[in-house]
Length: 127
Image (cartoon, rainbow, N blue to C red; front, side, top):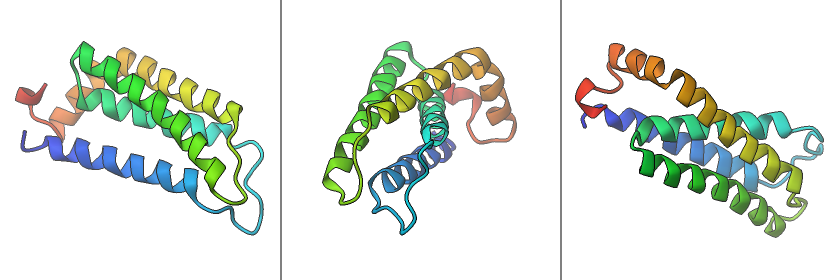
């Protein structure tokens, strides 16, 4: 598992970035009203990365459930941040992003995995 650390690190970075942007105080100018694309893309990246990390079906199901629940918890957490409000549409965008990440991974996962092996991010034994 010597190279799996890069997948772990990238997963941690994605989680930290999502958490930061989800729970930060709003800037002087208001947040974009149509930030759903950002939600969608962030959670698609989160899902893809997690599915690359855990390649067993059972683990993938747990990961998908975690990613959707994480999006829900981040929105709930916004109710405790002054100037921020949770949004059902953001939860939908997060969840749709997770599902799109799954579609991308299940369509291109083999190709992505081969590329990661080729550039030595993961080893063949880890897959």
